[in-house]
Image (tube, rainbow, N blue to C red; front, top):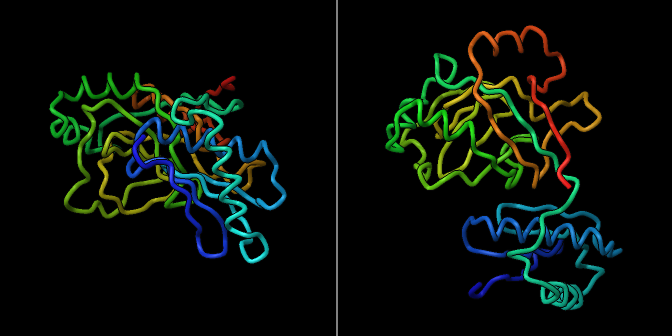
Length: 245
């Protein structure tokens, strides 16, 4: 795909393999699949791996490992298959997260729908039926950037800034969704509210989600949302899950 992928050094801390200049499903797929392959290779020089939207990072001490040697090894692995159409890693999780759309708890649903050119009911129907992937984790502990939604939702960020949305807020922009970890300001529109916690510091796995996991956000009523708040102490907000093979 053009001049991609590209391999670059990141100071003396590691190597970055980038599959595109902007977000796309094939480039994100490539980054996830390539990271899994590097992890599977268990190269002793690589102490840790991670992904961003379209890149795979390998933590390598380049003061003791020659960058040229590592680049040659990465080039050989890149030639081994078409990463843009590679299978996603196994063992990922599919989450179904109950979501209250609109109301005073998620007050920008109608605005987001208007910008997208659909009515609010249509917006809820489409978004609640969409299945999105965790493209990357960032901004706050465990906070997922998820996509891609249909082109209907290629809406820009707000020009202004919402001073704060609460933990569990579902926000939307540029064909992506985010569930907020903590109360924070944002330029994305607040369309839904969940009781789902993406960071649970006392849990065995504090980060609830991982890159490559998938999610749906089925619509629930205010009464159902209130019942979840009253009964659920796990921090999962009534979500169900299944392992993807």
